[in-house]
Length: 400
Length: 233
Ligand SMILES: Nc1ncnc2c1ncn2[C@@H]1O[C@H](COP(=O)(O)OP(=O)(O)O)[C@@H](O)[C@H]1O
Ligand SMILES: [Mg+2]
Picture 1 (cartoon, rainbow over the protein chains, first blue to last red):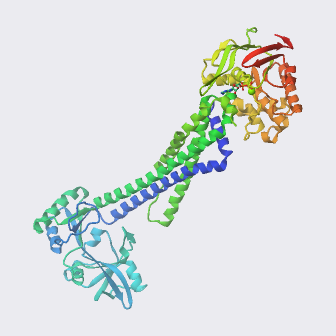
Picture 2 (spheres, rainbow over the protein chains, first blue to last red):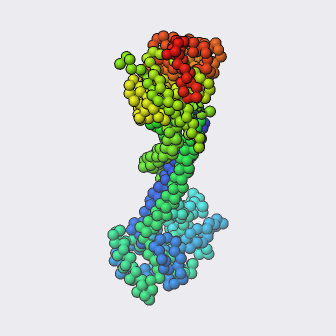
């Protein structure tokens, strides 16, 4: 018998019970839709994180005070020796694989202009920051070496700070107050938006020693270094470690975090997250399959007489088996298709709300979902179908 | 081979086992069905008429004994081969018409041809011709539920005939019909037999038996009477 005939029989049977067929598919629809959706959003988030992390510079190696066990993110300085500008000077001389480095002192303070006030992140740094951190001044100029050397009270402000304090007027050459200290505005940063949870536009940049002075700190929050190329990262780590350990009385009381390590940690976390959620969604696909099996069993029971009749007029066991398996496969594949469309719809809908995240429904996730739906239908159809196929035609015809 | 019977049963027994109870429903039936014959199977309720008809129609297998269809032993055939025999050699008519409610009348009639592998267009063409033959040419597209009982049984007969079977089996075909429509079915059977169709009909109705060529009476799983044209065969 032609397989298309089986398909027609299956479609007729499903069409005869439209509401029930749809409700039966619902499990698969939800399962497939959530797999598609979660994988799309998860992959989008991974791409987003990679882009953002790559955007903060090239071949970065960050030195933070305190020793942590892992090379990941989120470390707690354990109150050991500080990282100082003198450390950085030493590194500039001896760490030959580092092409550029810049100190960073982070604090927060209110910035005032007249009666306008805004609480901002203040970054104390030097003239290399622009290169190393890949952040640039748009109007005016960035902190210069002379500014740093003379501990000048000059500030470069982010876009949001500019807008909030100055509105449309030109801030260059004007004076603002950081805490109680007056600063002259020398530049405005380019718009960058939120990167990795930091709103760069809401920052104020000042010379590093000035920052140490007004915030009364002698250490650095971290040192950003740029390694000559990404093959040299491990050797650069060794150089830096050697220099710093020597200077810190033999203690390795600092941590080196490479951009790569941050990236792979984030990717691993997000990847695990995606797969766990995808796994949970797949379970709902399985539950959907069990739902199909359940309804198919009910359907076989209801259609006992039909099965008996079909056998009496010439259907072989194989025909009945195929009829019911195809019915269950059609249920799950149509459910899968609806689920794909629905899941993709939600994913692209989410894109409208988070335009920064490059959400994309990948071909492989669609294919996987489709194949999965097929297998769920075939697998959970086998038992009811073989039950139907094995019915004795006499008993089936007598069945009330 | 005009003289070999169409169907020949020899010493056919059928035993049903329900739990600890072993119930011998057919106790060694030997029977030949000739081409073109018209046989009534009569006897009290529970005597084994339906069981015998089902075995004749290859819907059920005998517990022991021989079944020859055109001189070929079929007891050991596979499910697929038996299905093919039911499809191409036999037609069945049941007491409760067993039409598929979600299919139109013509689709019901065409159903056996699905399993024969005929293309849809040809199936529907033949189905319509058969519906015309049983006097239902204006009802092709109706659903069975829109038809009276007598009309539904005629749809079932058209379905049973659609593959040009060698034998038409009917199990109490008039049992669910009033006597007038029952009479119409009986005369339809008479016409079919006159056109050459072999029929085996289980019935309680003496009026049916009057029209047949041969009357077999079963009691307790054995043939106790075999009359041909009113005379002992
Ligand atoms: N599948 C079965 N299992 C057990 N007993 C059965 C089965 N089919 C029929 N019987 C029994 O066999 C006997 C004959 O049944 P049947 O052939 O239907 O008789 P009839 O058609 O002459 O009324 C009855 O007693 C019935 O209960
Ligand atoms: Mg009976």
